[in-house]
Image 1 (cartoon, rainbow, N blue to C red):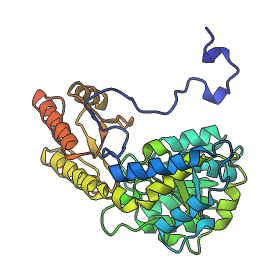
Image 2 (image 1 turned 135 degrees about the vertical axis):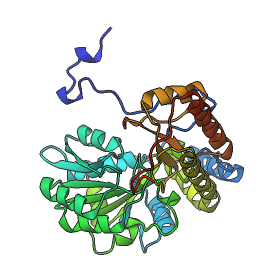
Image 3 (image 1 turned 135 degrees about the horizontal axis):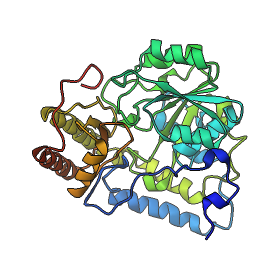
Length: 373
């Protein structure tokens, strides 16, 4: 049987594993930051009707530029955006890949501040872009001075900023974005996949788009909208950026069914986003309860929480799994990430943590430093 080693695969891909989180059949799955709440029945029916209306014409290609969908997304985002400043694709990953295809690639570089979203370096690899892993502070914070120093040092063609950051969960101070914009020689991409969950007072980078033609804000319907299976991501930027991305997008990349389903979901955004408050409540509950148990926890503006287990995170991960709870080992020594789901799922997770602490697998830690308190 032929294996990868027998094929003339690119040298820089040899020995790598595809991106992904374990998909295991366990009672409580809190490892992929999905929205645990199913679609409301009325929304599911509306999406079903929208899909049915497209079926007869599936012999025809979809709207190549997804103009109606982009107009709906612009209406949802506000900030004076119109369809020509919005672009959509199959998840925010594809949007970011297209950005790298247009503005990076062979002979160019992209920089991100780690720990951050682990797909960014993989997207760079796939597009032949040199990846620069910049650093955060010991407490996972990122200051404007630290960011500027590293951008000036490496002069990347694309800078990735995550707000809220994955896996730490904390939103960026807008001053950091502004400082990077002033010194970055190329594009600045702010990944706001979890923006809808941010704590009150958090400022979106969307407000910074006017006057910054090299700023791009990417978002997704997978999280807050509970539309992960629909695979719809999008960006907001200067219309010139959208025009550039269209140079590299595949023909008819967004199916008629995806466009119809996303538009139907957007038409019911109030109902879909109704779970955001409940999820944020569970997130805050996880943060406070883990701290009450003596564990270090990063501040979170997302639908997940990063916490220190007090030992080998792989051991803690397996122990939680044995209790029927699946969380995410993001490869950060001593830390695990748990998605905020339903109240019942939070109950199960906290009960598992209590059991593990009684068993001695997780020990309370000293009080955290600023930024992870």
